[in-house]
Image (cartoon, rainbow, N blue to C red; front, side, top):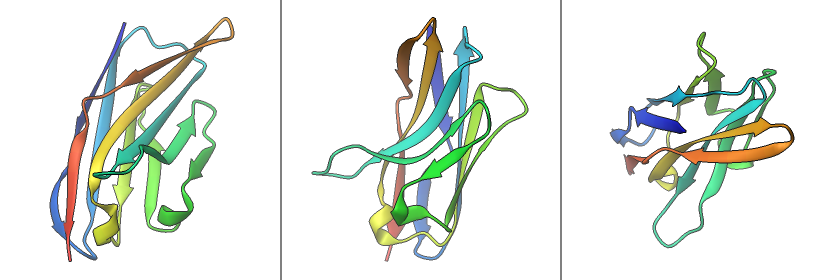
Length: 119
């Protein structure tokens, strides 16, 4: 079983920055991807950024150039540096870990952390 714990959300003015952190505990397969998703009120959950264990990252178009996803020295940590925040970035942000074992993917989610950007 894998548990994900997020931290770093909060209230910030537009144009400001926040850094989200996520740490996973439990059995962590070497074939994995860690990602950040977000869900705003009345909207579907969407991928913000993801990074595979091999180091390649992908971003939603809406955050390219503003957000940076990194993996920690410990393979089971992931960070999201959010700069130039906009009102529309307001959402609950969720950490996700997709672990693949013998070709079978397993998804795990954190409890979510609120990010509120005031205009």
